[in-house]
Amino acid sequence: MLYQCEVGGMAPPEAEAAYRQIDGLGPVLPAESAAFAAALVEGTVANLARIDPLIEESAEHWRLSRMAVVDRLVLRLAVFQLLHLPEVPGAVVIDEAVDIAALYGGPESGRFVNGVLDAIHRRLKTTPEG
Image (cartoon, rainbow, N blue to C red):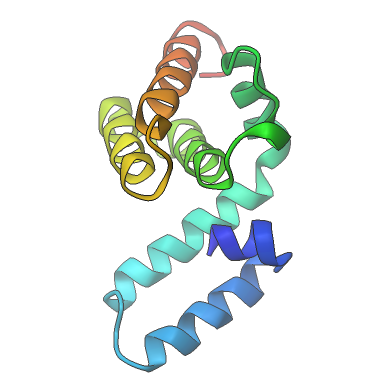
């Protein structure tokens, strides 16, 4: 859904509707998981003004616009979770993001995502905003 928002220019509700069409062919996710995924997408998109600066400050020599789309989206999703889902341990968020980036990104995506998220996680733990 985030990919559809970013590349397809869809708003989260449109991306969710597109997902439901795919899901209508046969359940891709259980309803509860699909609702959670939609909430993550909505929250991520709604908080880009806070998320994107954190990523750019922690991704040395990389602008968001130059990052691979998958890497950028995985980072955004993970940072949203680090900021807004305190019940999920940061290490779990980072591990899952690295796995997703390694699976769907380029050969160095996992390492890149790990480095950026580790820096953000450390920063959030030591600053009032975290």
